[in-house]
Image (cartoon, rainbow, N blue to C red; front, side, top):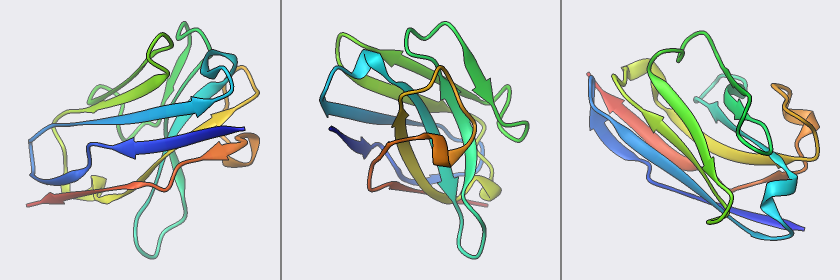
Length: 123
């Protein structure tokens, strides 16, 4: 079992930055790939970014590419999402997930999920 706890969300003005953290406990976190997903009210959950077990491979959704950066520190059992140049359309509940796959953009491939952290971007 892996427990995931997200933090770092909040209210920010458009153009601002936030860094989300996802702290893992339980089984060896380095054995899992990780992803950040988000869900806005009335919309389906979508992939934001994903990272492989060792951090050597990453994926970004087109809407965040060039603005967001995913990284991980396996020594600290933590995955990060640095979000710059935030836009109102980035407003959503952001979830961290861990999966026993190399890397995936599909939510169903992830085995463990956090409770989410709210990000609100004002215009």
